Amino acid sequence: MTKNFQLTDLVYNRNTKEDGSVRREYNGATMYEVAVPQKGDSWAAAYHISDWAEDVLKLSSNERLKSSTLKMALNLDV
Image (cartoon, rainbow, N blue to C red):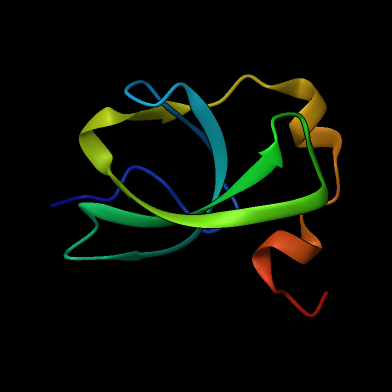
């Protein structure tokens, strides 16, 4: 199976109506660990980690969240 999303992609979950950032993939790229901000359009407050199935995801168009700092949510040393 070809994975549709990469590390740091901002995705939208059609079932939960939430945006989040891909932290890792597993299960042959059918599942993604996603950081989901507590306050919808910003990573500043905090975030939750959730497991999302690929078939309910699409790339997000949330510009405010895209422009917000992802470093904290992704635990990347950039």
